[in-house]
Length: 464
Image 1 (cartoon, helix red, strand yellow):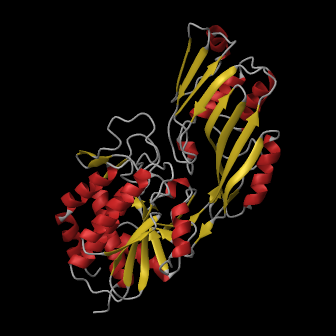
Image 2: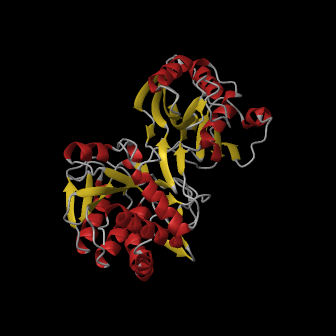
């Protein structure tokens, strides 16, 4: 493939700079915060955006700040043909880290830190891909725009704003997925569940679990009154491999229950151990009276621990193209008078989103159910010249066969017609996305930059 050797050598020679730039970006805790002036998603995401704009400018690219929602850098002076889309925001760090999540830690080939793979590492790789093409003097007939946003993890309000105020290039890929190419993404529904308990009979003083709506909660805890530790232990009739359940009774006679499970992304909840649904199962076995007790038992029935396909509430579905539906109860806060919880549903092409929402509302009644998000599936033809060019790049660099994938996760191009995901997670690699000890291999980071640079030359390169 033309320019492959030159690009590979350039990337290898600049790897220390790349890691240093990534380290600075990891050091910014760009979790969504309170809206401020010039910071629509909080101060820290805005800091990450400012850093990337400064870096792009320092490397000689023209930059554009879209009112602090997103930014971009452009390579070339011709009309734009290709867009590379990454995000600089991250999910909360959560528990269980051995390394500081906001200090890049290098251990051999491993680079640890929140955002190393999702999506700060790939964003830095995209910048270095453009640097490689620019500094090697590779001629282009079309321009490339690198777009970086700040709200992918919480609804992509950044991208919605950007697309209202800027015109996207005709071809767009994001390194916010997996290799070789993702061309199908399931639909996504987020449901907000609420309930009130007004009969004065509640025994669960508090329950808290989860942080991000799109992540399996790794920890959950509850405080219960009127139930002894002996009663709790007597109800423990099952074992739950891969989890830790701890309970104690304090001096006031309150029962404290803590569950540790395992994180996973909402698109693959079967890979996790849902601490929240396990806690609900444990609570459902206790003598909990009144409206609160009834609600807890109903939730335990509709979200049984270990089930992720939606069978219990009657919404299970599957098709050959996109696979099966997944249902995740991810976040909950409950006290003696009220409850708020969140669902994440990923559904196949064969389903209609509004029908699924209606089915969940019926199953959960009298719990109130509001659909905060209901996105249709996304599909791009794998036979397009664009997709085929990306597959060629992957095959040439890795020596592995290129193919298209269907996933449950929504990538950053979900609402961009014709968009696909190109990397950055390699087949069979678990990068602990949204979990503790997230990492990227440095060797993979370099390959990301190399493949994105080659994609630029394949799609936008001048005929020589």
